[in-house]
Length: 324
Image 1 (cartoon, rainbow, N blue to C red):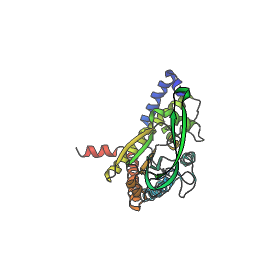
Image 2 (cartoon, one colour):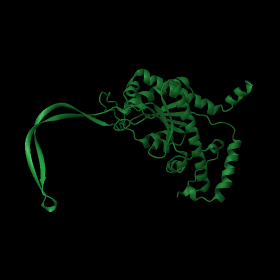
Image 3 (cartoon, rainbow, N blue to C red):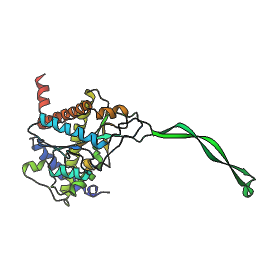
Image 4 (cartoon, rainbow, N blue to C red):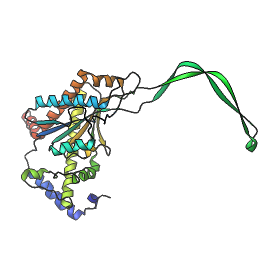
């Protein structure tokens, strides 16, 4: 059981209500000033590879860079007053921890990682010819301990087989977020980072950064859960744009482990699996200029809408009221 779960209710509950009261009094919405766009993998970290028969032999790192940079371009046009930073702009080796550190060091308010999906492929074979070969044939005589093997050899015509990978039928776009019930893991990553833990209180000049303090742990847990809500909101908006453009949407998924960039980033974070490079239709779409541009525009559009809703939470309510 983690340290967070061992905190007594006598400590947690009073702070919980005081935290909510403070948050309730802070009416000014947090502005999104810096957006981090992460073209997944890079350099020696190639990511998935398309090796089915007839594939374009695509490396995931190349797809993510092409789409990621297009997302950056779109956002810079749509949000000229917002800082949009890519984690990489070329084919450099970049590990997940490097990406998370970059996002945290640049005080990102939003983290969007671009990826391409893949599934394990089945192997098939076909006969491409025949050859003459010495083949062993074994027969047995007797029973039990008296059983003896007799091997004879004959030259026979045998088939020559070629083995290859079958493409997958799985295709579509999905978005991943870190599971909210594993908030303790994200909190631990924040505790181990070099940055101060930033909460809504910081906007009013109050910093909570005592990692051994029960109140810090409680605030961190509450705030990371808030990250998940915002991450899910953004992920849902991305998938809505994917659906609207006529592409198959596989929805928003939660991952409990294995995605460091979602776990260690101190901000709402999503990871977009743009398509399956192990599927012929998706692979060709992801390699096309049109496909990359359409996906980039959809992602950028969702981010802009999300930013507007976060910074103008009353806009929808006011519009609804005015129409009555």
